[in-house]
Length: 327
Image (spheres, rainbow, N blue to C red):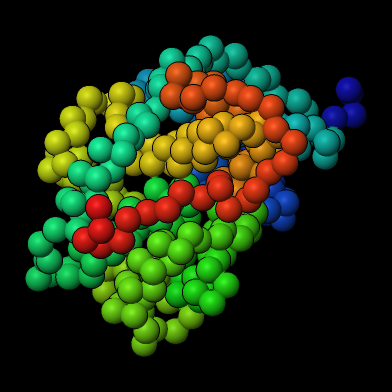
């Protein structure tokens, strides 16, 4: 341990940048992590100018901002722990990792939309009055919400779609910009294909393949912030009460609803949902089957029961959606 090198504040920014390059080379996005690393480097440079940073610098850095939540501190500790391991692998003095006691909210139960609620939502999105300033937003919503409901995409994945990602001849969607940077191919039901085709004919027919599929103005991609705000108003206009933060319904609950609908179909047809979990996991873009199993545990009261099966028919996984005016 005596031959370990001290970490100098003058070098910390370079080390952070090298660490960032290493992580991104493995396929990780590291966007929020980059901000935290930059903040940490700036803190070290200002707090210990032209000096060696102390072994307990992480605890000092975290305590420098009293307004941080435990969740934020926990995320920073996980990041810097990985950074500290990287520095140690290069022969530098180990940094002390502070203990942050943070318990995730495991009691949250997603809202699974009923058929009646979805019927009300379709009626609402199909009758939104156009906005003179942003006319395409209201044209996007019927197609976007049916896509989220029918395919279980994350909202970030849906809004990242480009015109060339939607293939109507093969009835598939290529999802490229995913949470884990794992490209996947999503099949569309016949009804969803017709909905998206109608939208494409009206809004994307003259656009290049790399143009955003959902946009404010041509070439200007829709943002999650806009959709979250619209979703809250759609709930209100559909007569579905919003119960507050961490209680929902949330936009992400459309993804949970898709998962439960898929599993319920399998159960109703006498198939074993656990035999289908690896397929559903890949379809949802989860990092592991365990992540998909959590959907079962969170919503087991909405499942009709579990039975065994000997085969699996893929098309039964994907629910049909109602086209505009078709409730």
